[in-house]
Image (cartoon, rainbow, N blue to C red):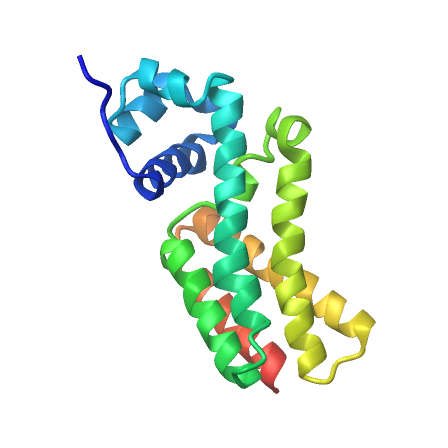
Length: 186
């Protein structure tokens, strides 16, 4: 039988979806195969290191997404800061399905995941913080204030995802995103 084909974006979306819902510990190779439409042998062919290598590839993919859709958008000096912020926040809304999706960084930092993927999780978070830091600098904040506000941004988004899921109310995420806009622009 010929190996099944799936494009990289669909492959990563499927893999990320499983890790988001089941975490690293709860995810099986069978779950990953079903989500991507590939046979387990095809996954092993592409990722000989198994589930750990797949999770690492998902983190690399997530970092690229954050770089392209958050950091670079926020650092685009050809746009006014308010427009950059609005675009980045729209992208963040899309990434998290308006608060319905779990963050892949959270999912891969639970249980054994943090010891396995701590560096990758940290790199993703630093990418995020870097973009919001630059926005803060461009808005005239002092370096320390810009860094603190950038970290607070990540805390608000991540916290709102957890709280929204915990109380069964996606509007918590929406409220946090709206608050971020006011945090930077007022």
